[in-house]
Picture 1: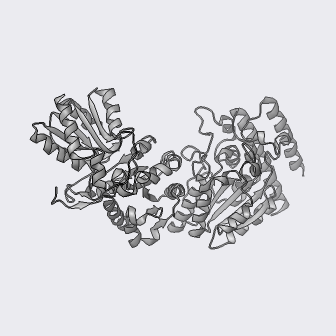
Picture 2: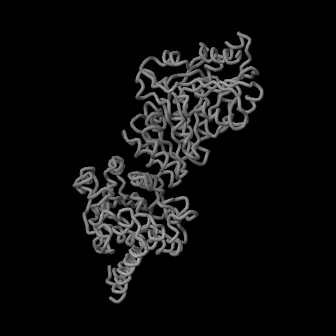
Amino acid sequence: MADVKKIATRQGYGEALKELGAVHDNIVVFDADLAGSTQTGMFGKVFPDRHFNCGIAEGNMMAVAAGAASMGMVAFASSFAMFAAGRAYEQVRNSIGYTRLNVKIGASHGGISVGEDGASHQCLEDFALMRSIPGMVVMSPADAVEAKAMVRAAYEHEGPVYMRFGRSPVPVFHDEDSFTFTIGRGEVMRDGTDVAIIANGLLVAEAVEAGKLLEERGISARIINMATIKPLDEEIVLKAAEECGKIVTCEEHSVIGGLGEAVCSLLSEKRPTPVRRIGTNDVFGHSGPAAALLEEFGLCAGNIAGVAEEFAKD
Amino acid sequence: MTANEKKALQINACRVRMGVIESTHAAKAGHPGGSLSSAEVFTYLYFKELNVDPKDPQKWDRDRFVLSKGHCAPGLYAALALREFFPWEDLKTLRHIGSYLQGHPDMKRIPGVDMSTGSLGQGVSAACGMALAAKKQGNPCRVYTLLGDGEIQEGQVWEAMMFAHHYKLDNLCVVIDNNGLQIDGPVDQVMSPYPIADKLKAFGLECVEIDGHDFDALEAAFAQARAVKGTPFAIVMKTTKGKGVGYMENQVGWHGKAPNDEQAEAALKELGAELARLEAM
């Protein structure tokens, strides 16, 4: 994909906010001293009277957003995934989840691809935390086009939403003009019958690459982009289980509590199927360039193909 | 206020206290101490200060009240019932399975409740968000929030104060019930929040300290709150925890414990006598 345009999904978030802000005057955006990084600054530049910096106080920001939402606003609240889902977990749970208020959490810098900042900032637990809150929609887009469509869908959705965006530029493979996004619906990127690889975030592009590598090795892999982790697209997973018989999940997240576990929970109850989960294996990350870290932790096409090949031939 | 107005408020505060005893007794659980110390402010808010309508509890320009110290729900519920947001008899279903009167305020189920609270320190932030949104929307409503003096040990409260001053939320009124006791003991022994008013002033709020059981003082303080422009207003109320029930007054053990049958009977007898005295005035 060397010739493909690369854009970070967080940039899609910022652009979508800016576009939505021009159409809907009930949007307010909160940030916690990271507006330049989360890209909400793009909205703030155009709509300074609807963009509120809360300073480095994420817990307050989440409950402030809830209060604004209770007045009929659609409140977007942003920080790094570590602080939005981690530090402010209980504010999100009680002031946003329990109240079912219209707050959309835009969490950037999720996953190990945060890179040089190291483990303290590499959130690998946000899917698990946010999935555990009743009614919370949890999503992570594969590219900037999907990110923009996701933000628009989140605005239309009534109730709390958590969206995780990435720091690093990733290949844009969706066509902006024709792409449509529906919350809770997976997307088959490539058909196959020997094994199904279900991925989200930047691992979708890697999984598609892995699919090509597997084809060269005589293995037919179905590649699914599962941008919505909750509610999970059960139909697409059960169909893949039925038609491929083996499932590999890939996420830039701990294997505990994320996409892999969501898929396993579904399959163990409705159609027991062998699964291999690719993610971080109950360990913290560390500093380094994003690409090197992804390689080291096996979050890359080569490892996905290797795991899927061995699994398919098993 | 006139003598008759004050008398009516005192009578209502006494009834709120009776509701606190009746509901926590029926629930065999709940928080009577801080509900009783706030009985006057609950009464003043719902019978004098707030622009609310029990027949239209969701009207867009209603004043908002957020009980940041959500565990004092029995006091709030008694005031709401007395103001006829829901039937008084329902107070006896507090904390029961199937009741809408949850242990802590639930905006999704209880008429008149504007924010679900209970986890300390969050209600005041939500109130800030409401006040900010109201300004952006041109909604003339005011936002009121009540905190405990133990609650202000939460760091988030001070994040909220910073926010409220920074965004000049002069439609926000923060009330702190300084009854001096929290679950584990006197607040200054557990983790001193003092000096409270000085801290609030340092954060840029305008602030008065009053006797929270004195309706004249409450009236003056809330009038001042409405007059202040450019920054939020805070009222620090010195109160007595368990006020109005002799054996509960200033007793830390009555923070989160319900009266048994005999205790409830004694409390209602004492409050009944006070009610009769007020009505005879």
